[in-house]
Image (cartoon, rainbow, N blue to C red; front, side):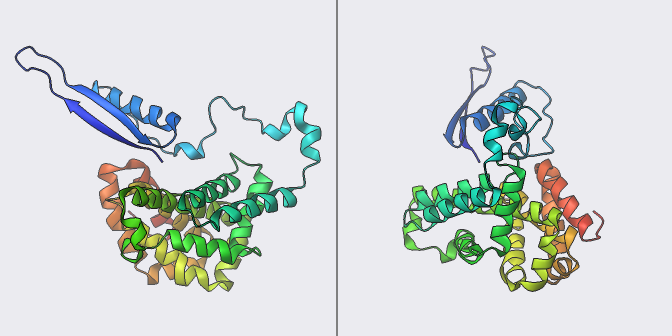
Length: 286
């Protein structure tokens, strides 16, 4: 997630001077900022901008080969010595140590680490799946879920320490990372088949996860990126579980998704496409 500030400087109309566009990066990866910056400047010059149908974090970087890194001959022997279970557990334990810290910037690093561990483009696919399952039903799942719950609290319930602008910005980053983590976990476990079984046996999905994701979808105007990640999670749940579909309908999911879709189809194509998939998974037509 990248944030930036845009300033427009009007030239002298009598001299037919152009409008100068200035873009300043406030936070986020420089590579993401440059990608967004180029599109804004191209649009300012009148070029046609094609909306992305897949977020950048789900794309393989163009400089990376399509062959998995573990398939390269130079590291095959080293890769063979790695035990997927041990590697996954080591990464999860390190992330939990960061999440247990009282410093929120350290908590953010823990969330970033978990997001990378559960992303098959950034981690070996087998290790990523093990990490995703650990969030769903592993021995540390309760603690991880509690941390996610803290990050998804509504502003009204935040402690006073978050009232400072810097802390609010930090909290919003943590909130977004928590949603990215949930999106990663739900996508991989839905494909593996273990998500549907967990929905049957775990009250956490009905009592917390589904209502929380729907609340995030409702924030489509103030935070379309968060709404997109939440919609991805809902799509995975609805596609793999009849129980999840029923729970979503009981929580007025169709009305919330349709409301968000009406906004997104005019303002945020990526979100609109994901909401359309969510509605189709719920057997509803747009």
